[in-house]
Amino acid sequence: TLRRFAGASRRRGAATDAFSDLEHEMWQRGATAYDAGFGPLTSQAAPTLVDAALGGLDATRATFLDVATGPGFVADEAASRGCEVVALDFSSEMLALAEPLTRKHAKLTLKQGDAQALPFADESFDAVTVAFGRLPEW
Image (cartoon, rainbow, N blue to C red; front, top):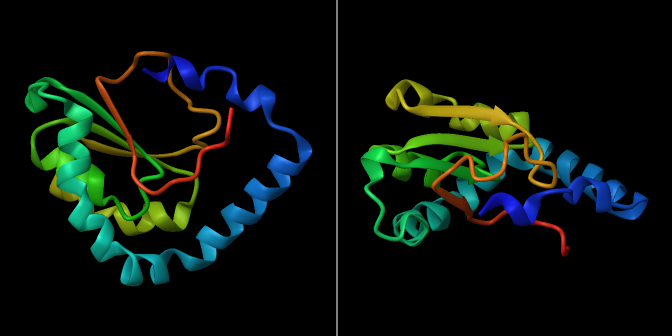
């Protein structure tokens, strides 16, 4: 569940904040290169990640959060199965790459936000994935 994320932003120190700022800047500049270079691998992993996250849940009734969504490969897979999906990323450039998915899937919403301070109440989703995002060591 999302309970383990509760309070994460309160435990972040100055060094973590500086690293997060640097990482954010890198993803802002490198979104297109990531999509072209690493995207094919992410898209191949998406069905397995969604299977594991759903764990047998009926996808057509499931709420699904894809953290660090990037170009949205995992979110696309979950939405294709009928999940109501929120795709979260801290990079507006990554979300711009995922934006066409919102026209493809009526039940897919993009949201800019920080994985270290999720803007959702605990237990808001039935399934959560973080495909290739970095989360802090809590």
